Length: 391
Image (cartoon, rainbow, N blue to C red; front, side):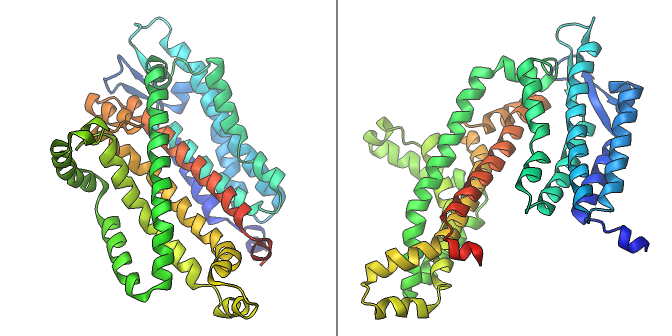
């Protein structure tokens, strides 16, 4: 009987256990200034006893619900409570950080501690599990996915979080942040677009010519194995030599450091997923379908346009999705060679020993990757022919 009642979802349980572990860490850190490590305060010292009891009680409830996640009702309740935990964590953090700083020197800071970050991680691991259980209920799926994020943006816009150190850093460098965000988007989007324009023809060529297949995949596989920082470094010398030999290239902004090597490296990294998926998508088409088109009198270009392209489009776009998410992360490293992007904040924070500046660059990169992934999933869904989608 007990086994029937307890049908745990391993992902949801993992998230709840992570959340319970977060209770043992500091939730807020009081620092004399932006660079000093500061004093980490546990949950009950950060927010007070009653808020601490509420958060602990909610995590215990979530853990119990994750053990009985077979019921749709339990999954919905679990998702709602997880959102409440995240909302309360940021609500209390904003409120109590102001109280903690009252009467202290202006340079004092309050940072979000390990406990809050672990709680958010655990909550969203479990929310992901809830989403997977609610795939047939889009309304409930969205209701367990977005309320906490909407609340955090509301708190941010209302000024409730203004005394949190990372928000102080953002407001101090807002213009720079916007500039580097757009720079990051342009770098990875432009690189993936160029990689797609090169990778798709390479995949098509490899799929229709056995002699080309091995050399193409040998090259793109070798590029993928080179660490990103090493590849950026390898491009500096030849591009510097070219820019000195041809002054016109320097006028166009092509040199050993900056945007040019970053784009070249990111394009090279995007080739493998796009080329491989294009190749596989064409190879997996049943030859009988191609023969049927030929039997109907279609030309080779008509077969490609009306049969191969629609059937292969979803898998090709999956390759573009993989390349895009990968490029969002790799673009951060491009800041080391002067290309800019959100990685600029990460390396500035490391050089200054300021964790909040690192977070200012890292969190938007994670968010950007999730947004790009969601957008590309939507595009893949739209591009999938109805017959394939139904199958």
